[in-house]
Length: 278
Figure 1 (cartoon, rainbow, N blue to C red):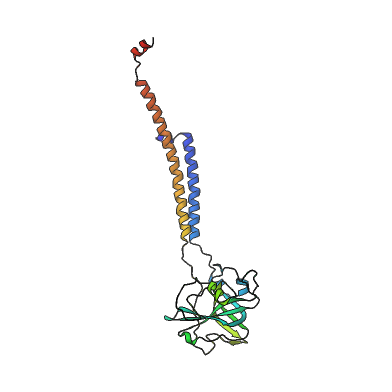
Figure 2 (tube, one colour):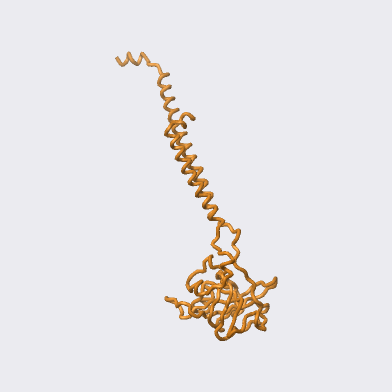
């Protein structure tokens, strides 16, 4: 079989197969490197306060490059649109978030069925241990600074008290509040009205400032890219295997031809058949 493999056509085919395999290996390495990359911006970006209107628009999803960004927004709280979010931990204690709709000044008006003139973003104003201690939001024009986080998925829960939700889901709040709602929410750090801090830190309320940090995706692996990386390695091995299989088939054909030729040489003519034919 080695003599067959050393034929010029099969040597050329081997060079081609190795070149294809090398390309597949490079693609595998590229996919593997991609699996370790994230689109999460560094703290130097997320910790720099940016206007909400420049970071996210109503009707748009919050992408990973803006996840955890500190933003600021100006508007007024709609006291009729406030919910208590269940099962929120703070310093190891079980409690609740007080979430109120902030009508954002200058937010673009969406078109289409169900769109409203005003757009709101849910703002987690603070943490409370007892839902009965939730207070109405401050009135007047408020400037809110906080961290922008992605909307949570809705959770079906039965027998919740009125005004309570099991998750901070923008999709669910849109239906509850019947207004255009950002596909994200803010966790307030500072809330200022006429120069006065009216947030959980600056007011004498039972609310505690919510502790959140930027989304940490360091060290996370994209398993889909890992799968693609393994696929390219298999393709590289298949390219060499296909060459070997073609050489093996050629070798078998040569052996079959030699066997048929030798078999014909071993057959002696029958003189009786020749006489009968005469």
